[in-house]
Image 1 (cartoon, rainbow, N blue to C red):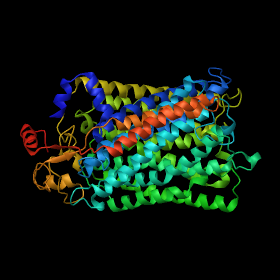
Image 2 (cartoon, rainbow, N blue to C red; image 1 turned 120 degrees about the vertical axis):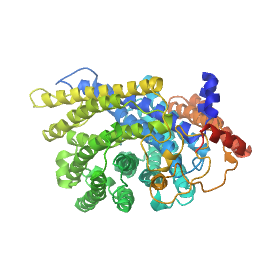
Image 3 (cartoon, rainbow, N blue to C red; image 1 turned 180 degrees about the vertical axis):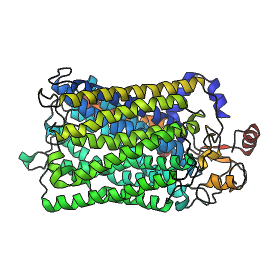
Image 4 (tube, rainbow, N blue to C red; image 1 turned 90 degrees about the vertical axis):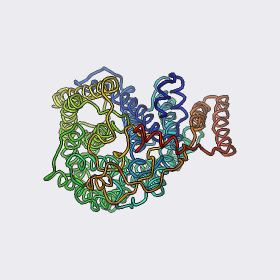
Length: 622
């Protein structure tokens, strides 16, 4: 109904629609576009790094610019690409999987996105404002506190604003999953993707405040003259590392867990079997979340915490491999004896298993504190975390996008192009990073701008750079696929994969209100339960009636815009107090919007039963 109207209106109306939307499905589109944009920027930065390291004594970019590149590549990929792409999947899928009409707080959902976007923009404005952050993506003190210029200030402000958006998103999904499940959807009937999002949201709730505190202290050190990290004045530089990694290690699981859930759904769907060991998978997910907070100091074995602390964190780090191993075996047992359909989505998922296992294996090697002294500042670590983050998270994002694309856009991505994108990326990835384990063991240090001739590092680095170009080719083919699909492909029905979970029981893309009638869940894989009894769709849990939906609002955009403006004021007031005007203007916009939101009653709107009946007759409903 509403889609036909929006197609008839102009571009301006569509832009306004997306600026003001509180619909989780449109917010998923926004996260997808913004995350994809930052992914391309991060990829470009990676290409420049690899070109610089293509041959010995290269002078393609200067040492200072190289530091900015490695800092911005890491920061962009983790905070501005991986996180929002995962939030895109969470927004697109979770409310549908639990049978909800929207998330618990649609307004906050919109606010979370705009905060993330404006935070990311602040970070990238630094390129044009006299230099990007250059203290590494971990921003270690005291290097970051004495870094000249405003680069690190941009890092601090950008991540503060962006992190607030992520925190809001995490709280929203926690409440949604606890409160908004359809009748009969008990916790042990939730699809694995919803379970992993639930645990991830809890991790966000507990991990991000540590980063927020660290960034606040850094902000006061750099912008208001405090000395939290200045050892000469009685501060403590190591405290930054603790705060950063208390956030930073759970962050790794925040990135990977939702994709573990996506893989579980994909293996189950394309093997035509229910997931093997469902309850063990749920337990393993919760255990990973719990243990994820007990291992942060394994990033700090070389700091000098002493043998007892090192041993405790080493054992905890090795222990976390166990629940991950449970998952790997359960995925393989799910496929065992299944009727496997080799779609692009399944291809990415199967490729993930050996790739991620290698990443986990090198992780256990790094967990041995004594050995870590040798590995720590070498390319071995770079190879390890790229096997986990790219081999796990990026492979997972590609798999999940191919799987849920028809649900988000009503069209299936072209399978031939999908497989054509997979092979150069997959081969390129292993060429790039497998060799880096050996470069590291041969003594090539991390974060170095050049390496010298005659050290035996030339061939490995050249192979690594060639691999990076292959990954870039794979990414470009994927983008071509997206454009080709948008222009060429026919629309598909609600259930192109013969799915098992609730999201496949409604049309693609779903109507504004998701479910005409809330479905009744009668078991794990609820749609499969209905199919096995020969029914077409879900059994409704309620009679057809009016549906209450929230109104769109421009206020989340304005609140975030205010913080964006104030951010520049905070950064530059160090040079001249006149910049404080921007702080007052920006905070005025933000607080004004918050006041408006508090005082103005927004009661939403109703979709009437008669309109729903018309939709059902046209076949737009459930």
